[in-house]
Image 1 (cartoon, rainbow, N blue to C red):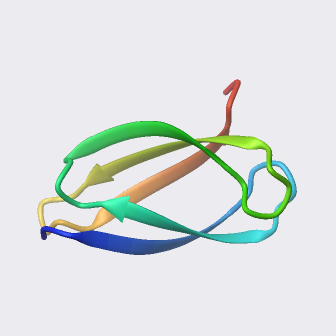
Image 2: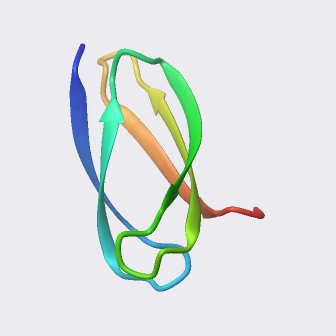
Length: 63
């Protein structure tokens, strides 16, 4: 699956629901993005499965 995928998750700091845009042209990625609610830096880890869907983990920056 080429393009982007919207993934619903929760901030590991404030617990608020957030929506992430995952670039599906990259099979494995790790990056830091600020929470849209509390502005804390979250570590985003995304791995595409065999069908091209993103499995996403959202952690605090220090985990």
